[in-house]
Amino acid sequence: MTQKRTSLFENGLIWFGAGVSIAEILTGTYFAPLGFGKGLLAILIGHVIGCTMLFFAGVIGGKTRKSAMETAKMSFGQKGCLLFAFLNIMQLVGWTAIMIYDGALAANGAWAIGKWIWCLVIGGLIVLWIFVGIENLGKINTVAMAALFVLTIVLSYVIFGEGTLHGISGEGMTFGAAVELSVAMPLSWLPLISDYTREAKHPVKATAVSATTYGIVSCWMYVIGMGAAIFTEESDIAQIMVKAGLGFAGLLIIVFSTVTTTFLDAWSAGISSESISVKCSGKWFAVGAAVLGTVGAICFPMEDITGFLYLIGSVFAPMIAIQIADFYILKKDCSNQPFGLQNLIIWVIGFLLYRLLMRVDMAFGNTLPDMIITILICITVNRVKGKAVKSA
Image 1: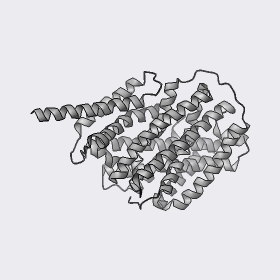
Image 2 (image 1 turned 180 degrees about the horizontal axis):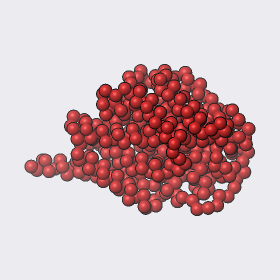
Image 3 (image 1 turned 180 degrees about the vertical axis):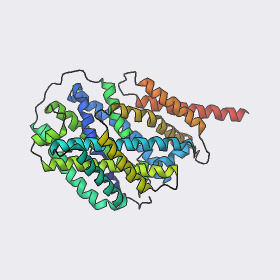
Image 4 (image 1 turned 60 degrees about the horizontal axis):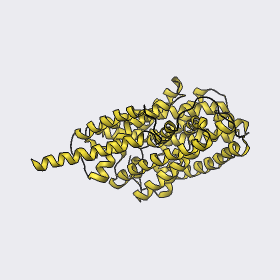
């Protein structure tokens, strides 16, 4: 899946589309019990943490001109990286299903012709996007993003301009859990971003534009969801659009935001498949991921994705922490080895640590401490190993 060099503007458009998502709006509704002030603070802190990690991950791919899973070989070896390629494909197919499910549910709320029909419509559009190819989506994306930008501003005005502040009763999440849920969404893009920054004309600048654009837009989506729950007492975004009289425009927001976001998941599933076997056709694998996601969205309920988000965090936070330590600090490359056994063991420790930290309520969530500890373990083990080699 060779691509031409992408401009900063094109990278910005890609990640604007990634940020405009019904799933992110729905996740934002969970923050309402915190109140608007604390909820906004949790969203901002979480996204600063998550998007900083997103930037570091994207620069690795951009500077080495390697896909996300190809960069994993640098820390985990030729065979060791296959574990993460497989896990990444699984999470991408899962995301594809979740996004189509949420989009179809919301679209059916605006125009009730059947959720399964909307699943097929959205899935079909994603397949169309894949066949057009990311290198040929420039003009289509520009038009789609301009429309989404205008319509999302209208949606924001409806919620914040015409809504009334309401108190939200009921048991809500803690501040630390809210921060973690805010970190989780940008964290879910960590194993993907290099798939797009590797083809940028200016890798570091493109990664900065990508992470910043995604962070701002994602925060905006979270705030829309939280604001919808607080100011309109309505968590069904389709019903908010219907009550606001957005009609067809609201339907466009739902459908195209779902397509532009989910396309990236399916496309990256195709790129990851090429890391598993050179015989894989990335484009056709991406089509397969879209089809599987569509079938999953039709057949299974997917209302609550918090457990899925935390699972993604526990897998990929320690993975990228090890990659950051190797690339930026240790300057180490295991890509010529079959297995980076040392790093695989450290990853298992980081994974277990993340699951343990989930039981502890910390103000900055558990992703950041897990990554810091994993990086420190990585550095310490390498220094002790280096001293042992010298003394021998």
